[in-house]
Image (tube, rainbow, N blue to C red; front, side, top):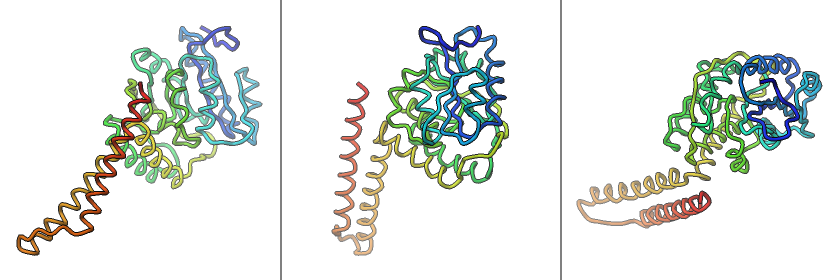
Length: 297
């Protein structure tokens, strides 16, 4: 079915392209999306959200006949994704970068997994970005942290190619950051709240143009995002280990003191502080978990 722009009701799909200074890549990406979806049976649109570009990104996208929203101020990749999610006409939203890195040819396969899954992510089989060694190491560390906290296997935590149900994502936009870590938040929000998420292997290409990724600042933001989202949705994954560690340190300190004093039990004030701290942290975790449980109802 051909691309639809002014459908009187809901569309089946919106392909969202968050863009910032992508004038060289935007038209090839739009053409590739159209070619990938030309035989897909649903109704769909392409929505370009221009994050206050200083080049001709908006003009070139508009010349291709797609819907364009231009943000008045640059807010970051996540801000554009949130703007696009709210403005999308599709029940499903397919999201990929406007720099040509993600092959749009994977879209039909990813769409085939709905409605069984509520989010389908592309798991990249290679790293083509700048600072490859640093990016790979940072992503691996953060991904393992996210897997431990979420209890799920995550092949690619910060993939920018994903398809999700718009109505579900709208419930979680309040906790999505404005920067690159938004894509990480979108994945963890679904996983931590019991929405079925699937990964499919995809290719990944060298981007067209200059990368906006900052290796230190953005990697730190990814790690902070993982911890923050767990605090939002699964706080016991953070508070219980902290309480256990404090309690074990106190017990170990007491055992060492018993050995040194040949069996005489002596509890130091520092041990009391550690035990009290562990109890307070556990209580805060239980209270936070109760609040999260009530919000889910």
